[in-house]
Length: 217
Image (tube, rainbow, N blue to C red; front, side, top):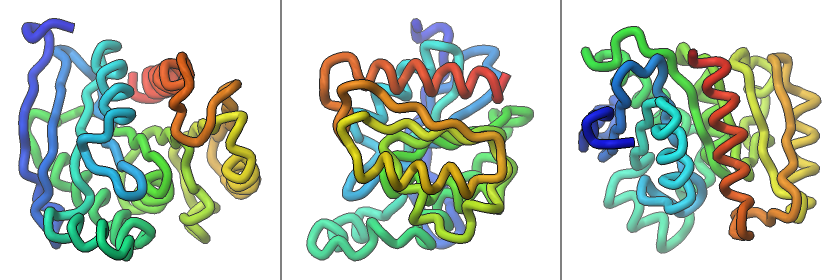
């Protein structure tokens, strides 16, 4: 994807209770934008999320990667891990970022999706109850941490896990049974929790691309 076919922006997002830093890629003529909710101890600079975002943008989908925590909160979390499992806080920030997006002129008419990793997946599922979202993808996620919100999720949801991540597979299978929306579980052969094995993250990106293109077109 050349620079001529996409608009890139560094943005400051007013989530309602914090100012958060983010990066937008908006391909020309796109019909949708995917907001990324990073996982435990990560940020908008997550190499795995940035890879997936690049693949989505290459397929013509807009992306918004942003920090769920402020710089001060990230420092605190690095010390005591007190915020990375605060799903209520993370979901509130994601919902706030979605409302911010709705107010942007350049986002008028764009359908919205969530891509959540690890604890970010639970935040995405919970935030979808408050926002108009057309699709959700979870990578190595902890949907179980969304609790009672699972039964109320309406957006079509794709759960992606690695075949060598048995505990998370079981947690995702349990979540799949609770989801009342259109939902699917995809197991990537040979992948562990972080999808570090050759070719496995590429499979995640392809699965996500297909799901989002189906629902955000």
